[in-house]
Image (cartoon, rainbow, N blue to C red):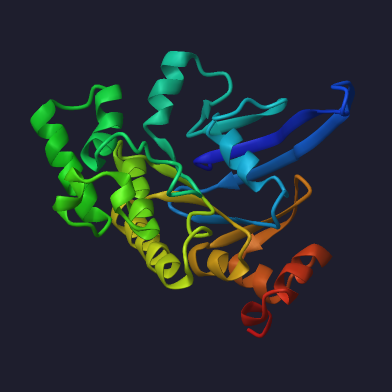
Length: 262
């Protein structure tokens, strides 16, 4: 059984005209089914507006679906009670795209990293402090960073803090939603290497969302290609990047010379 099972997932948004009258529905996610095996990275790739981020948030139940089913380790995510969902949240986390907007500017890094532990009543004050120190070192930052505020860091450093926060509860599954798109190339490469390192060390399972085929190829063992809310092709990374069957996948590869040439 896969760690994450998605079946016939649908998310519709009501469309309105300038007068606010309903003119139908837009399907951001249109009947998606996929599996993510424990310990693997599934790369979800497609152009902006294809529904990738919406799918990631649906899987974590950050937004509610129109219909469909998601199961995590056999548990029905959408059928879970508030108490059950709270327990599931410990195993399912997200790294957001924007390292500038995803951290509360009012709090120090130590408070930001300790907050999930406090909310879930994990450990006493001394144990939480030790866990926070462990987390900040795990993402390659010095312990002095714990006393600073988000505005004092670069974009890459803030994303490291965001990753540390996602790791705080020792999750098994993580959605990385365009985690390097707001960073320059060299810093983004460092974050990609960090994600790969953390996966090895913590045994993480990733859904890695990106519009960049080279990034997905680097990190993912399998790729799912999304277009207009649907998965149009999926398979092992080597197969998708060297012998794509779908015309949209071929167009994505053709638009990326460093992949197309491989």
